[in-house]
Length: 241
Image 1 (tube, rainbow, N blue to C red):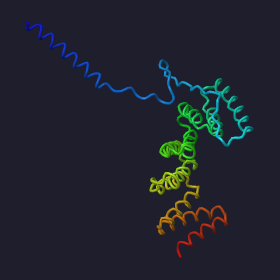
Image 2: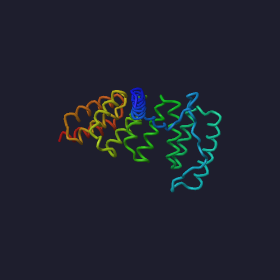
Image 3: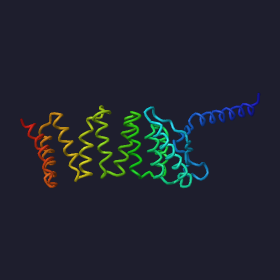
Image 4: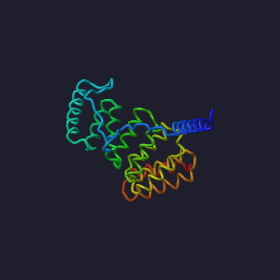
């Protein structure tokens, strides 16, 4: 065969190898997010909320009737105002009370896509994952996001503390850090100071416990709450015995 023929074969082989490499190394398509976007405009697509509700076994018929009516009214309002994240939070709460946690999360995920700076949305998702679905990693990540967005609101700090202390116990070593962060972000809230003092007391670290009991007492004195002052002072005395 001629040299020209073999050159042609060589070119074809090179092209085939290049195509194979492109297929092999081309990045995989990203997973579809839970909240889809319109391919053309990039706008967030509203999920389709069905009127059906998966009620929990303990929900009475009367409560089912009330929730169903509330959901129907909210769905009509959302149809008229699909970008109103407040309506979606309300819808999520109705589904949550019904025990339909899947739809409750669906509403919150859409609300989060519309209002990514709303700390309440992430706190509510954290609560569903924490108390109802027992997915502690997702509960943690949502509480942390809520704290990041609004550190001076104590709710998510407290929920994260309770998550680490009672449920996600492999993270219990993080408790001092998250409580100190809560104290820094909420300097007038002495509850976290008391909780941290009790944590150190229960951990056997008397020196740190006394430091935080004293800090708590200094703040409580400003309030004039004598009953609470005596209760905290009694805890402090007990560890000195």
